[in-house]
Length: 107
Image (cartoon, rainbow, N blue to C red; front, side, top):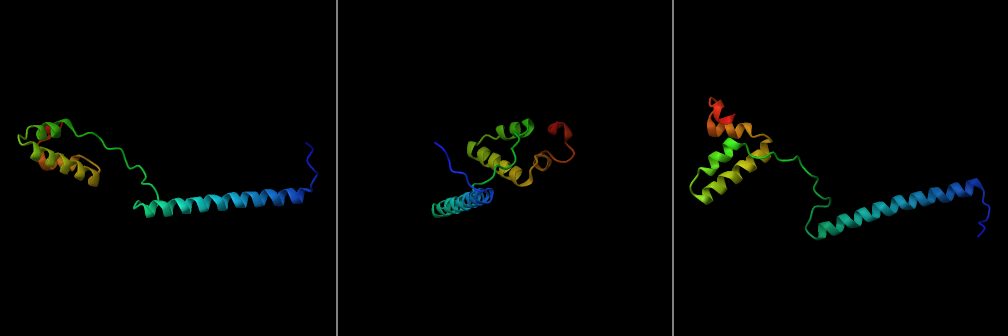
């Protein structure tokens, strides 16, 4: 198949229009996706991955494992994980449970 010859200006106009329409199409698809997510009760944009959680330190885990009542143990561990998520470090939790002067329990 032979394509007709066109001027450079006409070709540039067509490619510019194509690029503009592609950009507009992407923004419309993004808006439609956000509206659908909102109607389903979700946030408009997916939640970004937060920082990776470190595992609970061994002395702290041993402390919680020593609690006899399972429901209290689960509650205390869940509270420690929530506090870690808020603060971003285990140091404050270890200091509160083992005391500031007890370094051998933390090590």
